[in-house]
Length: 425
Image 1 (tube, rainbow, N blue to C red):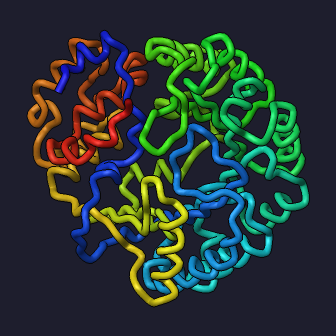
Image 2 (cartoon, one colour):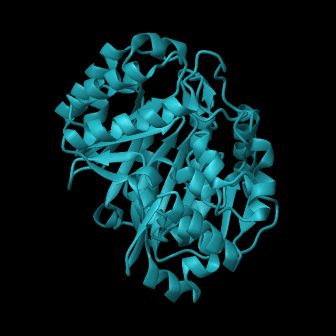
């Protein structure tokens, strides 16, 4: 593997590491899952009105399968009633475009969970849904709020119309602004707006324009994502930023958001203090289990990660197989990875790499980070990627930029080999 020093000098880029081991490493081996008492819940809704060029998530466009899928989804939820009796801390609807659900359909899902766990509206710190600008209207989201939705994550990606068009989106920046204003009138407590770095036609200056335009609306949370050229996306490889420019955009974003009074919550998230958040990710990184429902949904238990029916490219086939499995009382789980103690340790570091508690790490694993990874620790120190005191190892500003590359160097040899075919182009 190329040294971290060389990778940084060459501004190498690695897609965001948001879970470890990565789902691309799952095999067919299974074991009984063990869940934490406090629980995250994820619901996958794989329906969209358009196929954005940068999106690799499991979805289908303009499908008539929604009601059939929903029936299967509700059945899967009921089948896992014993797990859902745990203390549900977060509920997140992802996709796809889950905001395409009708109020009736969203209520059916929430009611199904509430019938199993009547305390969810009291125990859940966050009930979140992903949305696109064209799916926003006042009536629907007022009803969503009454159902308990307190966080809406809207993927703007850019506020430059020419870039939106190249992404094959069905909206323009004017509609994005209108959607923001509607959600403000609804009174959603935590409005999350996503921007992407490196989409087709984007420049450093146009990215800066998107940020300055977005800041005027004071969203509680902003998340920045660099485009990853993975096998199941449709981004054309010409007219793209250089890797060096992508890192420059991260620096620009940090300065603009900090100057505007935002707090950097993690390497790619900025929040208005005491208002913005993404509790589901935070709780996952703190060690809480997550159970996922729906086609392609992943579950992260204490001892195993697994995923329901999924295909890298044949999305509709995977969704139909999921529906068929549920209707025939078969398990939709198709792949998994059992966590060894070594993988659990690597996972813990990756999830806490931005601020690693040295005492807690030794308590959990009976060794220090420096003892376990002496060469990596030395490289991180020499390259000014970490700062360290008696209590913590934390990423520097430079380290935050290269957080995902650092995580890659924490992957086990087994995970690296299994990941090989999915590396970015």
